Image 1 (cartoon, rainbow, N blue to C red):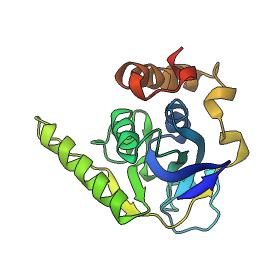
Image 2: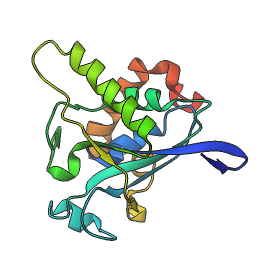
Image 3: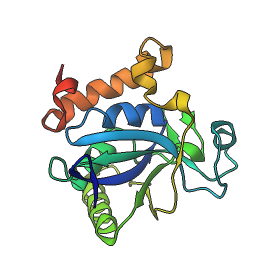
Length: 188
């Protein structure tokens, strides 16, 4: 655990489709102090958006979440992660298609791996129609921060069609489903 501004903090790395969407969702959570879009899980060092979008690098669009585990648990982060995208859809989230949009959790400790495996098993048990979670679990190796224009994308581009048509419905869904986990600004 690291200390940031005198507070304890941890990081978690998730990929759940377009990182603009996941960034906007996780910025809403209490205890989350920073969310950075980036790339992870591929074979290229210092990938660019264009390279990752080509589908040839093996990277996923991900977010690195810095959070205070006293205010929000890793299990709570996973609950929002699984509840804010379709973890049963292989390499696709809505209109975003390709390996770079896969559902993936990069665990950093044995405990994170166990918690994620348990959460996946619980969700699979609750699925009645034969579908299963396809979210990958992989050990964290590296994170490459995305280009500056991807950072805080929703907050700086709220009038863009993608933000209005794709991100805003996700935000509303999270507000309704996870109200108890939202920070004060997100409850508005």
